[in-house]
Length: 109
Image (cartoon, rainbow, N blue to C red; front, side, top):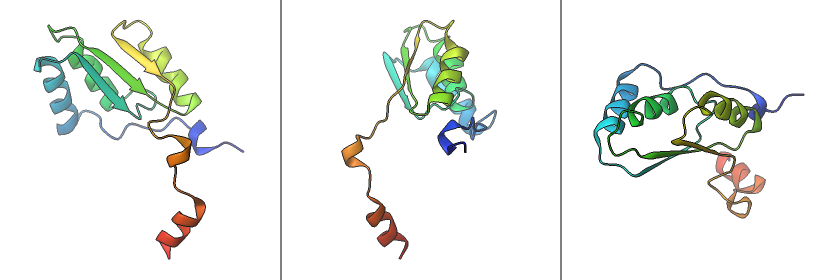
């Protein structure tokens, strides 16, 4: 059976007001590095960052974190021709900091 992490999910931010805002700020802000956590397959907000940062005169770098292997592979394939995009397969939360099953169960109760 396929895990939820193996599924390529559709973008949540695409050609809407937030997408336009990310793109505009990424193009104009004096940035050096940008970190996006949970880049998924690289469509949506990641695409807005790439489009904006690609035009930014400061030549900032974009670091995209994605833990799911299938999504990471799609992300890396999508942006392998963009040297300023650095894809990292990692979680922003250490395994020790994940909440326990018991904590989740108590939360729902």
